[in-house]
Image (cartoon, rainbow, N blue to C red):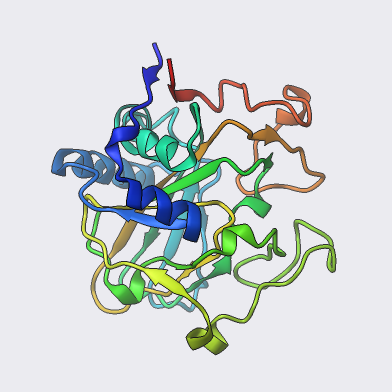
Length: 275
């Protein structure tokens, strides 16, 4: 049975901030037991990598940045978090959707002394979905200092799609060169931009639109930065098959789900709905 959406889990100011700026923080969303559950899931994922697991840092990096995708069906801790935590309710309230569907889960770990930055980017251009009703949740299981947190460009989710490029060598592997506008050089002119970001404690979570420009620096010092993300789809999300490999890739989905169809497929279960 699909649980009913509970919009009351998030305050109106957070809803306004998400819709206006494209990102917001929800403090203390997850209990210590829920954080411990996700932490166990992350450690299990590291010990048992999935087929989409990858190292996203160079061999010369004194630390290591690794990530993995789409493991909720085999890692119970991730499945329980997606289906039973309040994250889907928060996402539904922020989107204003009558239905919240799981798109995918994403594990991200930056080990101590990792230099690798996550460059400024939007998420949706890498995906195989169209539609504006979407929301990503990102929660750490370790304290995250300001210099290692996610940062967002306020309002950028309303400014259209920008060119997605590979993170390590800046190649345009998704859309052909020249077909989308390039990202602004935010790092060269940070004082000219409205940048949002929060120091985070375990239990906190940030929610952001898949078109909101965001990035993160490396992790200096001796602290790990282990995080877990859930991507949610709302009412207007539809399948957008691509002629290239999306990130993450859903092998064979284009033969099962027509272009423009709602994301009604077992890979993308409905988590919440209004009665």
